[in-house]
Length: 308
Image 1 (cartoon, helix red, strand yellow):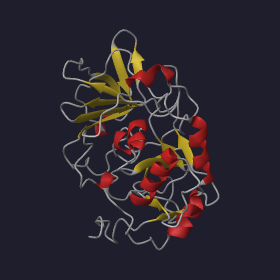
Image 2 (cartoon, one colour):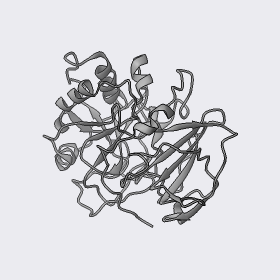
Image 3 (cartoon, rainbow, N blue to C red):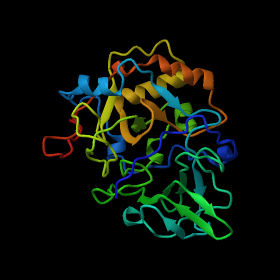
């Protein structure tokens, strides 16, 4: 079943969840080093339709950091002792992993407990190397939980979901690996692509995406799984040290289109240590400062990073 995701609730507060975004430390590995989230795409060729696709997303539109002190997509670290709970009701159960999920008491919900948006819950079992993600989660009075969809990922494997299966995201990809987290920016290295959204997408998905929720086959529209990178010549000297770390990641690892929402919304985890005013300066980056890379061939097979 295909779904159309609601727009991001960018201004919804998540203050109650901030304490849950535990620092993971530099040694924690989110997927193997050769996973597509970690690819260096700085030497990939520019896609021949790059200008048209960028225009459809808004060449003059601003890059919008959709995270800060009190908003973004939170996550919580769980353990083997965290109670596993069955989801009592699914909206897209035929494309969901229906095993029990380690939902802690009072879990951090995107936007807060009263939010009306995507309401993601991301649960990370650091010891087991497992990631559990749920979309559109609501409590069922004194009984448990209901959700739109859910996906479970082994962070020690490069396995993808079945083709045409959704996840907690429209692209059928995990959310957590694409979040900008304060701790990695503070260390000076974001070693992965970043999740982003657009308002209109094509009814098509490119590897490693597994699913799409677009409307129409206009080749100028971006498909789920589209990879863009900040142009190599973009000058980062006028930005703060933290913002330069983010911008350099966008040059090397780029961004992966993962959901329908607002154009050029860059996703991260909320953290009280963010400087919202400084993050806002990333809006000086425009859509025209990016280019679409040729990440799949004519048969839809992945184009691996060229050897250096």
